[in-house]
Length: 455
Image (cartoon, rainbow, N blue to C red; front, side, top):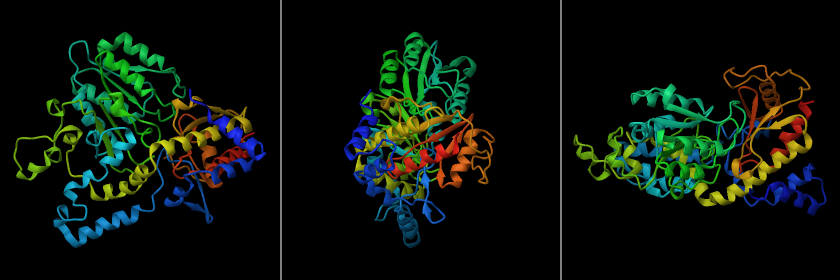
């Protein structure tokens, strides 16, 4: 485990002569934050004229201020050029899928030609599994973590059925029986070693959506490859959040959404990766005209001549507004780099962990690993103590699926106090300070507010 950020924070508090729970520490950390100016590039929602504390970037990232101009630019291009906009400068739409490939590749640790931006997450998962899951003989199973995000489970089970197999027999799950508990990754490596000859695909999340556990993707890939398994990852909660090196690790395929930490907008376009070592034209994949080689695409021949690599998985031309919405924040990622963002993220989340343990030691249980190499920015917590009050006037926004427990009540009470976070069944608060726009003062406000609401 790397040096825990609490040591850095304690040293800073000692340097300025304050306690580690004093507001002065948050103010000093914000003052010295080399990335502090980037917060101004985002639209922060307001309540009663003041910026809210937004801690929901794991669900939907904030809007970059450049999005509106980027979208309007393409709306104007449409109005002025109409169909000719596909081929005329600036930014011809016929090539628009290229404009963000380089920046996206940098975020996931890949080569430009190994990444494409297309479709949405579950669609891409289906496309990739349709090509990479080839059950043969005894090697028929897909290995996943227990209690994955439900859409992954739906997609994987349906793909197993599509290939003529039985998900009740051919889906292996590894993890804790308690859905809110992290589990030793050795369990994953052990089952790969023991049953690898039966496993066709190892398919894990990068970061577990509920617990915030960041799996050791490099170790999983190495173990699975040794046993001859295909390796794929759902990186929805990892992209833009955790350090990723998909090319160097030798991952076969991966997919992700962009509306969380990439801040591309609600329901926006997804991303996909296929390693350059994979000969995609030898895969039995689902095909569409946008995956055809660009130089002969408009010859409109019936025989599919796929472009090389992951771009051959494209089915249709991407929505221009979607691409325009994703570009400003991806440009920002490319400008800053994942290294500085990760460094700030470790401090922010370390500060959150430290304050929770100092101010609410007996009231809050942190479910996310304390090992900073095994988590992103999110801490998932469970409230053990009673609440000061169970009254709230704020309405839940989670479709009424998690009502009348401490997490849902606290979420609503914090909403009233100008703090936006989310909860997930059974009774978990998810708290992700995002380094692009969250501050140490945000974290201080969150924890001191929680302390006032919990006995």
